[in-house]
Amino acid sequence: MLLDELGIEEVAIVGHSMGGMLAIRFAFTYPETTSQLVLVNMIGKKDFRKIRPWQSTEEIYKESLDWKFEEIRASQERYYVEWDDRYDKYIRIHYGWRLSPEWPRIALVRALNRQMVYSQPVEYEFPHIKVPTLILSGKEDVRDFVELARSTCDLIPDYELSLLENVGHNPHFEAPGPFHDRLIEFLNSVQK
Image 1 (cartoon, rainbow, N blue to C red):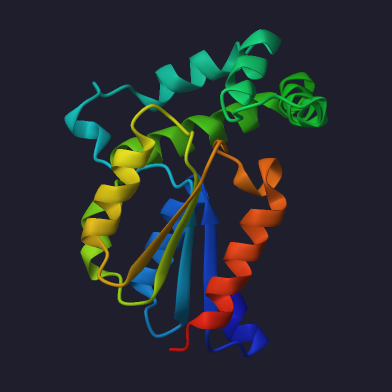
Image 2 (image 1 turned 30 degrees about the vertical axis):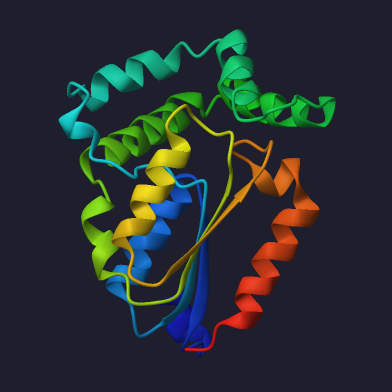
């Protein structure tokens, strides 16, 4: 609706992490509007319902309510190959949510997001993506990330894979120069 309101007929969609799942959904649902797709360290590349037990939204919510500073720090630190003090601000942002009077509502949104990642896998949509796709990721993400990125490529008909060496889940922060160079190169090279 926003694109229609702005009179924009075609867009390149870039999605990072869970945003990659949303980008896949957009490209699948609106192929005529999507000129290119870029997936940056996308999560949800496999159907977690096959490998993890179901957990209710209420259980996830209750776990989220008690989110401790140390857990937030550990969660953020695992996203990077080499920690830099500049990344401390992301810990402060997340911990600030925890201290906010809005925290119960934010915790519920987090629980709903986790439930969506679990119950709405996008792997079944990969073969139906009809636009040029770049998988642009830090190579040192979670344990099986490279294997999953390659298996994703096997399912998307028109793809390029770029893995940035010695970079984790947030390549746009850890290696902004190489990340943006590759992103711009792809966006400039593909014509629909």
